[in-house]
Length: 271
Length: 318
Image 1: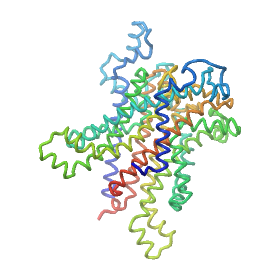
Image 2 (image 1 turned 180 degrees about the vertical axis):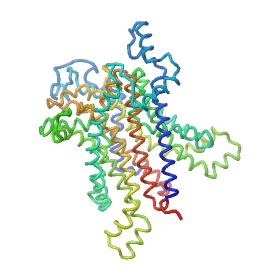
Image 3 (image 1 turned 90 degrees about the vertical axis):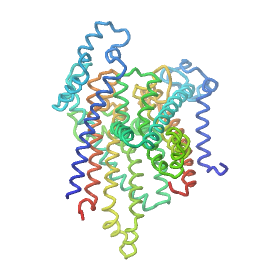
Image 4 (image 1 turned 45 degrees about the vertical axis):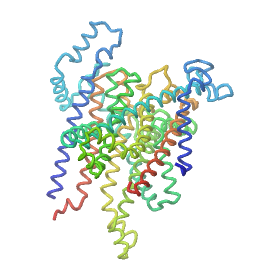
């Protein structure tokens, strides 16, 4: 833990900063989330650090509350996709046979439809609420996690210590959670960072299309949607979320890269 | 051609099967989900009569299997049903828009594919020096920003500040090719940027992989010059991975187009789909979903077929 590279430190710092902002949004934000405080699209000033939005709400406060929603939805979806995807992936690898075939072919099928298109098809008949959004994103993303978890677990499953556990008479659940999970954790954690970024980008895209987080609730994609008319008049309010999303994504990437490098060097560069 | 042909036929059959299964999934996804379609279209305040009428019109009362087969057979004959919102046949509305979308995707592909391969080669040539590092950094940045924000960023800089191109990409049949191209210049640039990063990275990895093989070293050791090594030994072996990369990214382009069309209010399939998802027009969503899935599966199929055909071991069996 002592020689963390500078890039990973920067990444950790910004990631932590964003998560703390999300946690303590009501304490940090200078104004209320839906509070109209000034004129329409005021430029940034000492009073409104980032200016105001399309109906005169303080943009900085909306960005902070929006970050809270975006990060919450993305985190919840990532946790769901990881729990479901990795458990199913491990089960498929350990049980093999028709369970593996059935799950793997179903995952192939879902992955053959672009995620965004599939999400749009499903959201066209479902009420768009935050729990549904998390569920749809988490389930769709769990197919990707399943693939990785299964591939990693298949490698581990043939190790001697797994066979030893089998001969000892351990149950499938023991083998999955006590033998395979600890050894598969590092690649999965690195992948988790990437999946989290995809979840952030995905929920922003859905909100931008008007099919994600619904107003008056704020989120980064929604802020772009609300302020996009301003672009034509040269008002850059809609571009501020770009900075937030990009810095968050890059910092999480830097951390994930470091985790991945650390784990591959532990295995003697086997990758 | 024996084993290669057999593999190709198998792969095409698998693709068709996959498409059929996708149609089931798309149909099931919109029909059997817990949400009541009629209720979500009309909202909470709908009267019971209106709900019953709409259910009748949607055919929700028929058994789902029967409805699926009716829908599938009509779709195979080119009849995608009628839109709930305006009562127009979907096939007619889609025809024109599909053309527009393919026009946009085509120009994005024409620009991005050669550029990505060239930059990928450049990154390999200057591996671990500044051009390689610069390309990696730009790639990381462009992966970290969602497509629609790259769109607005370019719109703000190029259309609003510099006034080079229009910020809205309306096109119609009466425009000449030049006018159309000027209208879609910014969306094409955005799509190019979006797929360029992925394509470049994957091309770089594919070529590096080939260049590290033992036979390249042998070719160098027997005294061939760099050009001949690449032409005779590296290139034929890199075709399959590169075609794969290109096809995967064209498939990615199909999805990117959806969002970009909304940003630039471009009259294509993506905008049509998104519009009707928010209006909860289920038949249109199903039709668009099916077409997007078909294009996506088709491109992946081509990638696999090309990589089978370019494998000399399969083409010339022992």
